Length: 319
Image 1: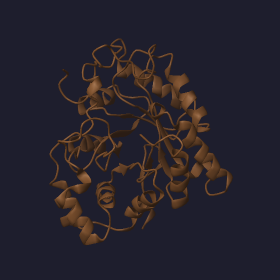
Image 2 (image 1 turned 30 degrees about the horizontal axis):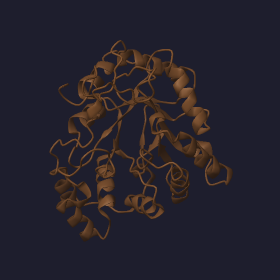
Image 3 (image 1 turned 90 degrees about the vertical axis):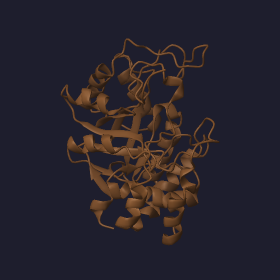
Protein backbone atom coordinates (compact mmCIF):
# COMPACT_ATOMS: atom_id res chain seq x y z
CA UNK A 1 0.00 0.00 0.00
CA UNK A 2 1.26 3.48 -0.79
CA UNK A 3 3.02 5.46 1.90
CA UNK A 4 0.38 8.20 1.74
CA UNK A 5 -2.23 5.69 2.92
CA UNK A 6 -0.22 4.75 6.02
CA UNK A 7 0.25 8.23 7.43
CA UNK A 8 -1.54 11.47 8.03
CA UNK A 9 0.46 14.63 8.62
CA UNK A 10 0.50 16.82 11.71
CA UNK A 11 0.84 20.61 11.54
CA UNK A 12 4.50 21.23 10.81
CA UNK A 13 4.81 18.20 8.53
CA UNK A 14 5.48 15.35 10.98
CA UNK A 15 4.16 12.01 9.73
CA UNK A 16 1.59 10.44 12.07
CA UNK A 17 1.00 6.71 11.41
CA UNK A 18 -2.69 5.98 10.86
CA UNK A 19 -2.52 2.68 12.75
CA UNK A 20 -1.12 2.43 16.25
CA UNK A 21 -1.19 0.11 19.24
CA UNK A 22 -3.33 1.25 22.15
CA UNK A 23 -2.22 0.40 25.68
CA UNK A 24 -5.22 1.32 27.85
CA UNK A 25 -6.07 -1.62 30.15
CA UNK A 26 -3.07 -3.59 28.89
CA UNK A 27 -2.16 -5.79 31.82
CA UNK A 28 1.04 -5.30 33.75
CA UNK A 29 3.51 -7.96 32.74
CA UNK A 30 1.99 -8.26 29.26
CA UNK A 31 2.22 -4.80 27.76
CA UNK A 32 5.98 -4.91 27.16
CA UNK A 33 5.65 -8.06 25.06
CA UNK A 34 2.64 -6.55 23.26
CA UNK A 35 4.59 -3.44 22.28
CA UNK A 36 7.63 -5.47 21.21
CA UNK A 37 5.37 -7.72 19.13
CA UNK A 38 3.67 -4.72 17.53
CA UNK A 39 6.96 -3.09 16.55
CA UNK A 40 8.20 -6.38 15.13
CA UNK A 41 4.97 -6.63 13.08
CA UNK A 42 5.52 -3.18 11.62
CA UNK A 43 3.62 -0.82 13.90
CA UNK A 44 5.37 2.53 14.22
CA UNK A 45 2.91 4.27 16.52
CA UNK A 46 2.31 3.55 20.23
CA UNK A 47 -0.43 5.28 22.21
CA UNK A 48 0.29 5.58 25.94
CA UNK A 49 -0.82 7.68 28.92
CA UNK A 50 0.35 8.55 32.42
CA UNK A 51 -2.96 7.29 33.82
CA UNK A 52 -2.54 3.84 32.28
CA UNK A 53 0.26 3.14 34.80
CA UNK A 54 2.24 1.09 32.27
CA UNK A 55 4.48 3.66 30.59
CA UNK A 56 7.60 2.03 32.03
CA UNK A 57 6.84 -1.27 30.29
CA UNK A 58 6.03 0.56 27.07
CA UNK A 59 9.36 2.35 27.30
CA UNK A 60 11.25 -0.86 28.04
CA UNK A 61 9.75 -2.41 24.90
CA UNK A 62 10.69 0.55 22.72
CA UNK A 63 14.23 0.48 24.08
CA UNK A 64 14.51 -3.25 23.41
CA UNK A 65 13.50 -2.80 19.77
CA UNK A 66 15.90 0.12 19.36
CA UNK A 67 18.70 -1.89 20.96
CA UNK A 68 18.12 -4.90 18.69
CA UNK A 69 18.22 -2.69 15.60
CA UNK A 70 14.56 -3.09 14.57
CA UNK A 71 13.92 0.67 14.80
CA UNK A 72 15.62 3.95 15.54
CA UNK A 73 14.00 6.50 17.85
CA UNK A 74 12.94 8.62 14.88
CA UNK A 75 11.09 5.64 13.38
CA UNK A 76 8.58 5.32 16.22
CA UNK A 77 5.77 7.78 17.01
CA UNK A 78 4.89 7.88 20.72
CA UNK A 79 1.84 9.61 22.15
CA UNK A 80 1.25 10.06 25.86
CA UNK A 81 -1.15 12.15 27.93
CA UNK A 82 -1.32 14.59 30.83
CA UNK A 83 -3.55 13.18 33.56
CA UNK A 84 -6.25 15.33 35.11
CA UNK A 85 -4.81 15.42 38.62
CA UNK A 86 -1.70 17.07 37.15
CA UNK A 87 -3.27 20.06 35.41
CA UNK A 88 -2.25 22.71 37.96
CA UNK A 89 0.23 25.05 36.23
CA UNK A 90 3.07 23.91 38.49
CA UNK A 91 2.48 20.23 37.80
CA UNK A 92 2.16 20.06 34.01
CA UNK A 93 5.86 20.01 33.21
CA UNK A 94 6.80 17.61 36.06
CA UNK A 95 4.09 15.19 34.89
CA UNK A 96 5.38 15.35 31.33
CA UNK A 97 8.95 14.79 32.51
CA UNK A 98 7.83 11.81 34.61
CA UNK A 99 6.14 10.28 31.57
CA UNK A 100 9.29 10.80 29.51
CA UNK A 101 11.38 9.20 32.24
CA UNK A 102 8.98 6.25 32.40
CA UNK A 103 9.12 5.88 28.61
CA UNK A 104 12.90 6.33 28.46
CA UNK A 105 12.51 9.11 25.89
CA UNK A 106 13.94 12.60 25.49
CA UNK A 107 10.71 13.82 23.90
CA UNK A 108 7.19 12.71 23.09
CA UNK A 109 5.98 13.01 19.51
CA UNK A 110 2.51 13.99 20.70
CA UNK A 111 1.27 15.03 24.14
CA UNK A 112 -2.45 15.31 24.89
CA UNK A 113 -4.59 16.77 27.66
CA UNK A 114 -6.38 13.56 28.67
CA UNK A 115 -9.71 15.27 29.55
CA UNK A 116 -10.86 18.89 29.79
CA UNK A 117 -11.74 18.39 33.47
CA UNK A 118 -9.39 18.68 36.46
CA UNK A 119 -9.24 16.77 39.74
CA UNK A 120 -7.78 17.59 43.14
CA UNK A 121 -4.17 16.41 43.25
CA UNK A 122 -3.70 15.33 46.87
CA UNK A 123 -5.79 12.14 46.94
CA UNK A 124 -4.22 9.88 44.30
CA UNK A 125 -4.91 9.56 40.59
CA UNK A 126 -8.65 8.88 40.98
CA UNK A 127 -9.84 10.88 44.00
CA UNK A 128 -13.37 9.78 44.89
CA UNK A 129 -15.88 11.34 47.25
CA UNK A 130 -18.16 9.36 49.53
CA UNK A 131 -20.73 9.32 46.74
CA UNK A 132 -18.31 7.50 44.42
CA UNK A 133 -17.90 10.53 42.16
CA UNK A 134 -14.57 12.10 41.27
CA UNK A 135 -13.53 15.18 43.26
CA UNK A 136 -12.90 18.06 40.91
CA UNK A 137 -10.74 21.15 41.10
CA UNK A 138 -13.00 23.77 39.58
CA UNK A 139 -10.35 26.49 39.88
CA UNK A 140 -8.53 25.11 36.83
CA UNK A 141 -9.63 26.11 33.34
CA UNK A 142 -8.50 23.86 30.49
CA UNK A 143 -7.51 27.01 28.59
CA UNK A 144 -4.77 27.59 31.17
CA UNK A 145 -3.80 23.91 30.93
CA UNK A 146 -3.42 24.35 27.18
CA UNK A 147 -1.10 27.32 27.72
CA UNK A 148 1.00 25.14 30.01
CA UNK A 149 1.14 22.48 27.32
CA UNK A 150 2.44 25.05 24.85
CA UNK A 151 5.46 25.69 27.08
CA UNK A 152 6.41 22.00 26.73
CA UNK A 153 6.77 22.50 22.97
CA UNK A 154 8.92 25.58 23.57
CA UNK A 155 11.21 23.54 25.84
CA UNK A 156 11.53 20.66 23.35
CA UNK A 157 9.90 18.10 25.65
CA UNK A 158 7.18 17.37 23.11
CA UNK A 159 7.00 17.85 19.36
CA UNK A 160 3.25 18.43 19.10
CA UNK A 161 0.30 18.90 21.46
CA UNK A 162 -3.39 18.13 21.34
CA UNK A 163 -6.40 17.17 23.41
CA UNK A 164 -8.52 14.13 24.20
CA UNK A 165 -12.21 13.83 25.06
CA UNK A 166 -12.99 17.47 24.21
CA UNK A 167 -16.35 18.32 22.68
CA UNK A 168 -16.93 20.75 19.80
CA UNK A 169 -17.48 23.84 21.96
CA UNK A 170 -14.38 23.06 24.03
CA UNK A 171 -12.34 22.61 20.87
CA UNK A 172 -13.66 25.87 19.47
CA UNK A 173 -12.78 27.73 22.67
CA UNK A 174 -9.12 26.74 22.29
CA UNK A 175 -9.15 27.57 18.59
CA UNK A 176 -10.55 31.01 19.39
CA UNK A 177 -7.52 31.92 21.56
CA UNK A 178 -5.84 31.52 18.99
CA UNK A 179 -3.30 28.93 20.20
CA UNK A 180 0.41 29.76 20.11
CA UNK A 181 1.12 26.22 18.91
CA UNK A 182 -1.43 24.45 16.71
CA UNK A 183 -3.84 21.89 18.07
CA UNK A 184 -2.29 18.88 16.35
CA UNK A 185 -4.71 16.14 17.35
CA UNK A 186 -8.02 15.29 18.99
CA UNK A 187 -8.39 11.79 20.42
CA UNK A 188 -11.94 10.61 21.11
CA UNK A 189 -14.05 7.48 21.36
CA UNK A 190 -14.99 6.68 17.78
CA UNK A 191 -16.51 3.67 16.01
CA UNK A 192 -19.47 3.06 13.68
CA UNK A 193 -21.99 3.52 16.53
CA UNK A 194 -20.35 6.86 17.44
CA UNK A 195 -19.08 8.33 14.19
CA UNK A 196 -18.12 11.75 15.63
CA UNK A 197 -18.97 13.45 12.33
CA UNK A 198 -19.32 16.96 13.78
CA UNK A 199 -15.99 16.81 15.59
CA UNK A 200 -14.21 15.34 12.59
CA UNK A 201 -15.54 18.07 10.31
CA UNK A 202 -14.42 20.76 12.77
CA UNK A 203 -10.97 19.20 12.95
CA UNK A 204 -10.67 18.91 9.16
CA UNK A 205 -11.56 22.59 8.83
CA UNK A 206 -8.67 23.52 11.11
CA UNK A 207 -6.10 20.96 9.96
CA UNK A 208 -6.37 18.88 13.14
CA UNK A 209 -5.87 15.13 12.97
CA UNK A 210 -8.36 12.84 14.74
CA UNK A 211 -7.53 9.62 16.59
CA UNK A 212 -10.18 7.00 17.39
CA UNK A 213 -9.88 5.18 20.69
CA UNK A 214 -12.02 2.15 21.53
CA UNK A 215 -12.50 1.53 17.79
CA UNK A 216 -13.63 -2.05 18.44
CA UNK A 217 -16.28 -1.02 20.97
CA UNK A 218 -14.01 -1.55 23.99
CA UNK A 219 -15.34 -5.02 24.93
CA UNK A 220 -13.16 -5.03 28.07
CA UNK A 221 -14.39 -1.65 29.32
CA UNK A 222 -15.51 -1.41 32.96
CA UNK A 223 -19.16 -1.30 33.99
CA UNK A 224 -22.32 -3.26 33.23
CA UNK A 225 -22.39 -4.11 29.53
CA UNK A 226 -25.38 -6.46 29.59
CA UNK A 227 -27.70 -4.01 27.84
CA UNK A 228 -25.09 -2.47 25.55
CA UNK A 229 -24.52 -3.36 21.88
CA UNK A 230 -21.53 -5.57 21.10
CA UNK A 231 -19.96 -3.87 18.13
CA UNK A 232 -17.86 -6.80 16.92
CA UNK A 233 -21.01 -8.94 16.85
CA UNK A 234 -23.06 -6.43 14.89
CA UNK A 235 -24.71 -8.21 11.92
CA UNK A 236 -23.51 -5.61 9.40
CA UNK A 237 -19.92 -5.79 10.65
CA UNK A 238 -19.97 -9.58 10.73
CA UNK A 239 -21.46 -9.86 7.23
CA UNK A 240 -18.73 -7.64 5.77
CA UNK A 241 -16.05 -9.58 7.64
CA UNK A 242 -17.39 -12.91 6.38
CA UNK A 243 -17.59 -11.65 2.81
CA UNK A 244 -14.03 -10.33 2.97
CA UNK A 245 -12.57 -13.29 4.83
CA UNK A 246 -11.28 -11.02 7.57
CA UNK A 247 -12.12 -10.43 11.25
CA UNK A 248 -14.71 -8.01 12.58
CA UNK A 249 -11.85 -6.12 14.22
CA UNK A 250 -10.13 -5.69 10.87
CA UNK A 251 -13.34 -4.30 9.35
CA UNK A 252 -13.71 -1.77 12.17
CA UNK A 253 -10.07 -0.70 11.89
CA UNK A 254 -10.28 -0.41 8.11
CA UNK A 255 -13.42 1.75 8.44
CA UNK A 256 -11.39 4.35 10.32
CA UNK A 257 -8.37 4.16 8.02
CA UNK A 258 -10.54 4.91 4.99
CA UNK A 259 -12.05 7.91 6.78
CA UNK A 260 -8.54 9.27 7.34
CA UNK A 261 -8.93 8.76 11.09
CA UNK A 262 -5.98 7.48 13.10
CA UNK A 263 -6.91 4.32 14.99
CA UNK A 264 -5.30 2.72 18.08
CA UNK A 265 -6.80 -0.72 18.81
CA UNK A 266 -5.54 -2.34 22.00
CA UNK A 267 -4.43 -5.94 22.29
CA UNK A 268 -1.83 -7.96 24.20
CA UNK A 269 -2.41 -11.10 22.11
CA UNK A 270 0.32 -11.51 19.45
CA UNK A 271 -1.97 -13.08 16.85
CA UNK A 272 -4.52 -10.28 17.19
CA UNK A 273 -1.83 -7.60 17.09
CA UNK A 274 -0.65 -9.07 13.78
CA UNK A 275 -4.20 -9.51 12.49
CA UNK A 276 -5.11 -5.92 13.33
CA UNK A 277 -2.03 -4.69 11.45
CA UNK A 278 -3.20 -6.55 8.34
CA UNK A 279 -6.16 -4.15 8.12
CA UNK A 280 -3.68 -1.99 6.19
CA UNK A 281 -3.70 -4.53 3.38
CA UNK A 282 -7.26 -4.53 2.05
CA UNK A 283 -9.92 -1.96 1.20
CA UNK A 284 -13.63 -1.75 1.83
CA UNK A 285 -15.89 -0.87 -1.08
CA UNK A 286 -17.93 2.33 -1.14
CA UNK A 287 -21.03 0.26 -0.48
CA UNK A 288 -19.45 -1.47 2.53
CA UNK A 289 -18.26 1.86 3.92
CA UNK A 290 -21.76 3.26 3.56
CA UNK A 291 -23.23 0.29 5.44
CA UNK A 292 -20.86 1.04 8.32
CA UNK A 293 -21.53 4.77 8.16
CA UNK A 294 -25.26 4.05 8.39
CA UNK A 295 -24.73 2.30 11.75
CA UNK A 296 -24.12 5.62 13.47
CA UNK A 297 -26.53 6.38 16.30
CA UNK A 298 -24.26 8.72 18.33
CA UNK A 299 -24.07 6.00 20.96
CA UNK A 300 -21.26 6.48 23.47
CA UNK A 301 -19.95 3.37 25.24
CA UNK A 302 -17.53 5.20 27.57
CA UNK A 303 -19.18 8.23 29.13
CA UNK A 304 -16.83 8.66 32.15
CA UNK A 305 -19.72 8.27 34.64
CA UNK A 306 -17.68 9.14 37.74
CA UNK A 307 -16.93 12.55 36.23
CA UNK A 308 -20.45 13.71 35.36
CA UNK A 309 -20.48 16.36 38.08
CA UNK A 310 -17.15 17.90 37.11
CA UNK A 311 -16.84 21.36 35.64
CA UNK A 312 -16.14 21.01 31.91
CA UNK A 313 -17.53 17.44 31.77
CA UNK A 314 -17.58 16.99 27.97
CA UNK A 315 -20.23 14.37 27.27
CA UNK A 316 -23.61 16.08 27.57
CA UNK A 317 -25.60 17.55 30.43
CA UNK A 318 -24.01 17.36 33.84
CA UNK A 319 -25.93 15.51 36.53
